[in-house]
Image (cartoon, rainbow, N blue to C red; front, side):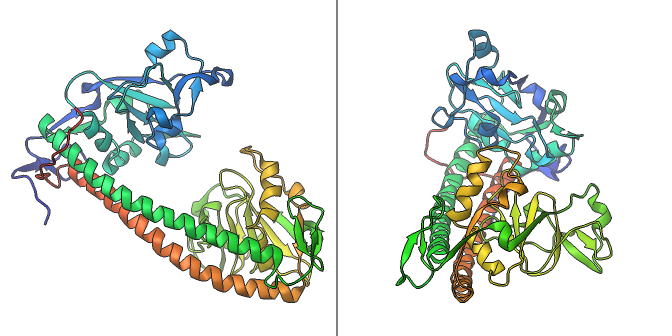
Length: 449
């Protein structure tokens, strides 16, 4: 049973019902000063002194050993944009509201460091807040909700200093902050340890799945055959009786359609599901057909992918990584490419598995080469693929369907456990820093003040 404080009062913060009566509510401006980060041309970066990037704040990795960014900062830059113990950083701008106002607290001063113009620094100027407490408090879920209600969104979401200065902050006594910080530090470390163990298990099963697909798809089930060099670096040795073709020789390829106003397509009826990149699971390749967007079958302007088609992401961070296989007819976003067999001697499901191997990956990522724009459809058409006999393809697909189904069930279970632990961690922090749960446990460990 969770402990509670003796007296509560109605909260001054909209999304919190009640708070401990003796806790104070102040504005963030009462804690200290805000400073936007440094904005310079590309030539300024890549060498020099430590540079705290947007990613360091977003991923909560403001520690010297985890910072790999460098900037040619001057002494004046290092003074104005310094990174000191107790500083709190907030993500300032992004394409979506969900990525704004994410915070990270610096627990140790980083000498000669500067920080990104896509972030805002809060430098506490008094003794009102414990730095370890702030690292939990500003990452609490309710803070994210408070900020998201106030952030402007035009072409990009942005967080102004004015909005951040007016953020209401719930402040326990400094003694309670130390106790809370110590308690949450130990509890979250225990949860994080369990999460890390489970994440290592997912890596093992993902690697097992990948090696199984690669070996079976590229060499077949029967290894007692004669192999020869395909003559193509990305393919290597293959059974001598297999063929090498260009993708366009056996498949048709086409991209989908974008939607400007999704509210026009939220009524399910005589429709096709509309699949976006986010609807393809990067771990299992499963497609979410129930995302709430549907295209009327009578609408001829949208391209349709038939059942048993491969959907490949061409652009963005998921390019070449998110690859789904349809079990029904669908419409799909223009960042996805539909690939469908036009050759009776090539199975669609075999190609889907082949796309999860180095035969495809080496060709795709050699073209991508780190560019955000993605890979052109006109180039993918000329990718080399290996073609076993139709009977071997059927055998390969049947074998991999069975084996990967079992692995995917294991992965789904492990990922569910990870999600549960992450939700537990989020709820724990939220409940403790808002006073919903009283910390009464005395932890014998030095608390950072």
